[in-house]
Length: 146
Image (cartoon, rainbow, N blue to C red; front, side):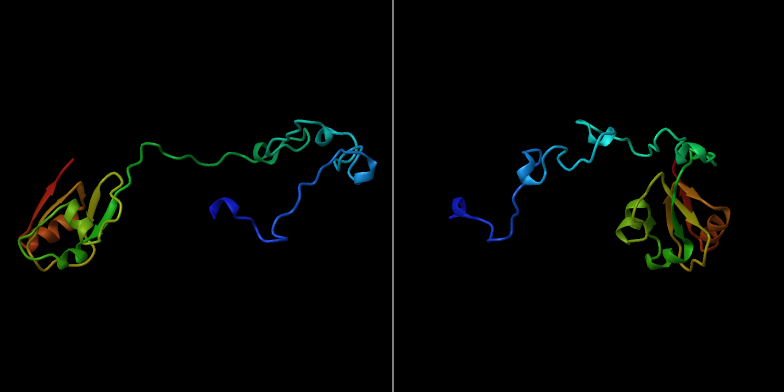
């Protein structure tokens, strides 16, 4: 019965009861040592606190910055577009279905790495000049969506 389940013998340990007299072995200071901030109730020392000394994260200089306006694109190489059949429209959904793009981020960018042997209509957010040239040389079309 579910209501009668118990952990096996020796699997659980009793709670250590501190501050219950000298006979318990944890009386008087209850295992906290003597005096000081850590012996007080509600004691909490924040992370990085070094006893009043200037903490490490404030001693070290700040370096660089993170551009919050930076756009991140999922890159697709021209050589990978050869897996599609001729005349097909290759858009973001088709690229995801083919497993060429896992996460779109801020868009998909076609990069001119490799060669294209078939004519395709490619729809992407960005396209490099070399990629555009190779697609058009293979009598394909590039449609850049914003």
